[in-house]
Amino acid sequence: MTKRQKRDRQDRAHSRGYQAGLAGRSKEVCPYQILEVKSEWLGGWREAIEDRYQGLIK
Image 1 (cartoon, rainbow, N blue to C red):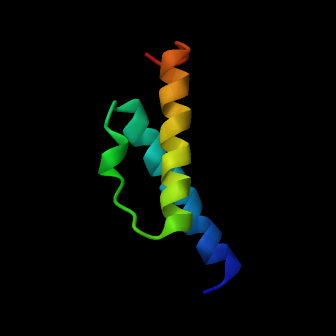
Image 2: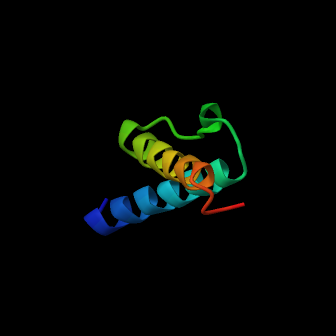
Image 3: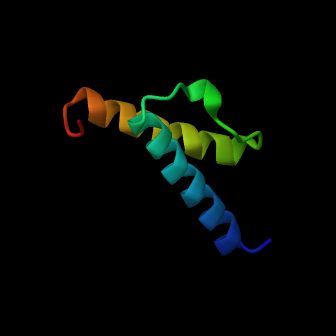
């Protein structure tokens, strides 16, 4: 797998984690098993939770 494909998968995971966080879903719903990708998803989820907490998103 090329670096770009790997990066794209991680970017997608981050974005999906962010969307899950915005929707108020639990971090337990993370669909990824691979540690690198899972941590990207969780990073996105955390960002969304933070943004919601700070009132940036309703």
